[in-house]
Image (cartoon, rainbow, N blue to C red; front, side, top):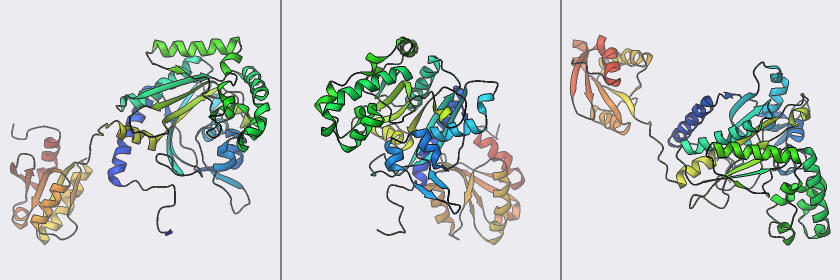
Length: 430
């Protein structure tokens, strides 16, 4: 394979595709603003320990998927494989737990890097939108974060969605469930895959999420985490479900839903696409509560909850449901200049129009007038401004509205005001 092509598991987003992404990103930012979230931007790479401690040594991400390298100073650095650990590291480093207003509500757009087998919607460089709320253990926050995630999809026009929720319980509940899983799976240890034999020692809950052993008979009879919730955890989960019901958000409880990261507890959730033809991997978003992560990264005990949403999978879901993304590729104006003097005059005119907020382009190929007009058509220009030698002599510009074909001669020194009025919907003849 040629080294002059994009590396395996990465793609170029060309202008027609980035237009879709820009529309989606703007919608997501507007929704976050409505929910009073603020954007955070963290480095592309971190000290490897941030992810070892923040994601968990027993996870597939840390064990198999990270892009890790040594810099010239011998420090181990890792390209960011997920967003939460970086955000929490920043939260701790900058003492955001000391802010007067709590909880701290953050969102991010960021590329992530995971060495895994590329497939549709799952790349080695993936783009993620995510939110994190740090500083509150109120179950209403859990419901708000789930509501935000659902709103993102619904306001973009998706309908074929399924929300799955579960409770992993607090530390006491998890320990009780952990022991029950060890007791249950230990007799089958030699029948499990090599990964699950390790998980049995390190994090037995993740056996329930194994793709290799999912059809093993022991999976069907595995103890449910919901049977091991203590009174506090049961009450917490009931409150989350009640809040979702009050918001009119439909959900299903799935006791086998576990999150792949070690730090999750209490609420866990996933949003799936049920659109026909979306593909075998239906998960769009995964998230949950993580109480204990800030301590792992050197900060004070601070409860948190968040989710990560794959942008590639979001765009795939929009395509699967045939959601039309509004096109914004119309051009306000295209300037056609014929002759040397007109070419010179166009330079200042274009500069003045742009400085006054008017979108305009011109020909840079030295083409004849007919070819320039064709270019204006291809750009879907609303207006064409024509400058020839005669117009320059008379200090005029010929303005043609493409939709109606109407033309009008406008003094050059009034062209900016004329175009501003036209583009704002006004009528200069009134």
